[in-house]
Length: 157
Image (cartoon, rainbow, N blue to C red; front, side):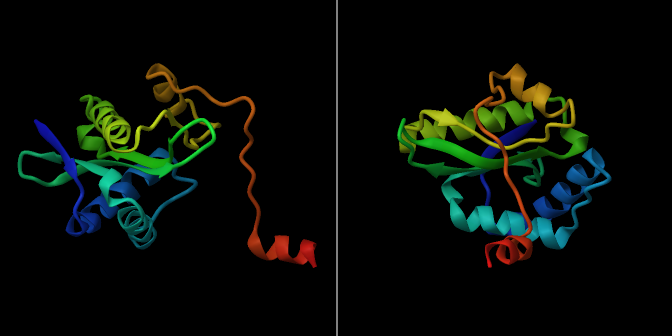
């Protein structure tokens, strides 16, 4: 069994360990460490603590998380960016679906959210197949752009 509730700041160290392990196991070529996952999760906690929900086991230990940013847009409020993960020991039990549902319900209730958008990995079947299964499809009109800050500055000079 598990319960869904708001993440507290004291949950972040354990969630950082889980995230580093889960993300590294999912893609060993792009490993995460606890220092960077801790900074990343602290960012989410400070940015939008009311949209940072966790799944907790019977011992009240964190086992997964979903967080989103609430952003106004021309077509209404959107849930954007975001992170979702569940400890590998607890995957395939519907926990990610429960987290996703809770976050969207809260976003609708508190912010009248109309849409959800995020970035995921294009080269892997999972998690894109999971997102498609729950009704989230790639936006064919959007392109992820990225660059190295120092290289961009050089080219702008």
